[in-house]
Image (tube, rainbow, N blue to C red):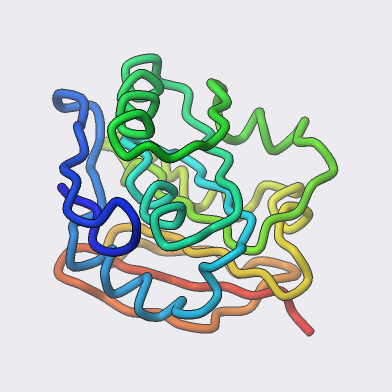
Length: 182
């Protein structure tokens, strides 16, 4: 897994052993192609940050800031290492995403990346839980976007306050980009 473009282009990112399911380079490239000129100077929130690849890619492409939210200690260490090797800077919060959202500071972001774990055998669906979180919409700036990565055939609830702008499938991965209802 490497940074695709920008100041850290080509740098290989570390990933923790079997804790994450990092976004494939081609999916990340497609997402950033869709976002285009929204990246430079953007305030970015990277939820379920894992390796930090999405947020670090945004920083490499000129984002103003990235806040990474990740609860796994091993992943937090990997994000710290990846930021160091790329010589980029971001803030990391070690906390469960849904808990963080419930107590989030009154701050909005131009781009919110969310890559929750895929549903497990018990049917736990963090993508649906995230979309149902009442404070999620409050983190998105008025012209901002939520970029959700989920499993290809994953059922998602309709979300009050958000509308689907783009819905694409790449292999087993589905990318859904939401904006605030206007």
